[in-house]
Length: 158
Image 1 (tube, rainbow, N blue to C red):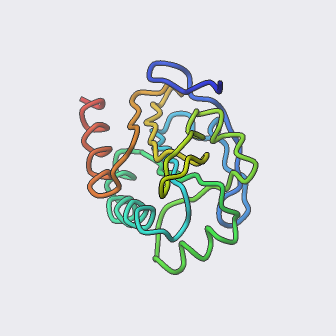
Image 2 (image 1 turned 30 degrees about the vertical axis):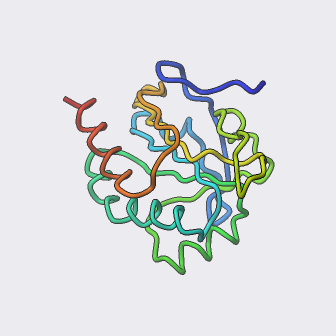
Image 3 (image 1 turned 90 degrees about the horizontal axis):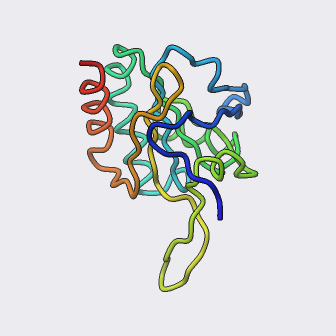
C-alpha cells in the first residue's frame, strides 16, 4: 500500500519538468503558497475545465503569492500542446514514471466503464509557505474548484 500525503504533514519534496522541460522543485518555492493539483490527462473534458478555471483565477492566486502547479503523467510535449491549445497560463509538470503521483498517494484504483484500473485520482493539495500540507481536496469536481481553493487560501490567510 502506498503512503498518502495528508493534512498537517510536510509535503513530499519533488523536482519535475514543466512544459518547457525546465525543472521545477518544491524546495525552490518555499515562502510561497503552492496549489498542487493532480489530474488524469491533458486535453480531456474535466481536466480542461479545471485547467481553464485555474488559468482564469491565476492573477488572483498570484496576488496572494500562490503558485499553481498541475501534475499528470503526460509528457512535456503533451503539456506544451495542451497549454497552447487551451491558452493556459499555469505551469504543468510531467511525472511519466509517477514517482510524485505515488508519493502523494493519488495513484489509485478507479472504476471506468465497468472495469477497475489504476489511474490518477483528481486531488488538490494546498501547501503552505512553510512546506506543510494545509488542506487536501479529494475526488475533486473540476467545475468551481479554483474558486474553492481561492476561498480556502483566503480563510487560512486571515
